[in-house]
Image (cartoon, rainbow, N blue to C red):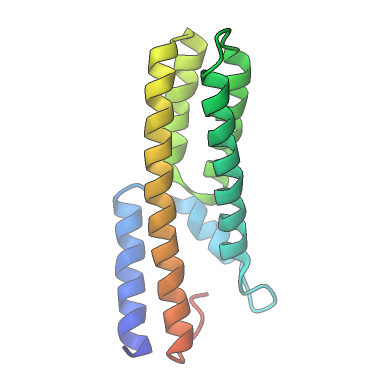
Length: 149
């Protein structure tokens, strides 16, 4: 496939991510920080987000599995996830975290457990879509096209 066709695919796919609420304007701002001196900036930042989120989701699972549930601890993890998702423009993950934090404040165990499942699902969807996005960018470079930024 030629670079021009791949570039069109990338633009269409990126627009879809914004329309479906996976990404917001913060992602565009993150992309603007990337330049020829640091061509992998976005991939590196998003990869760190993936690693951190997987750790936080594991911590949340463990915290919510405790007999004496510490809602402050759970809320702290959710707050951290909300901040990191906001910093890369992961809008749907961030919005789910806002709801999750409200349930922590209400000390609603069942709602927190359901929110954890929603956050895990939204994160898995986002990760898959971002991997597709980065794969398209790599295909464009391999086809001799210019970098996205």
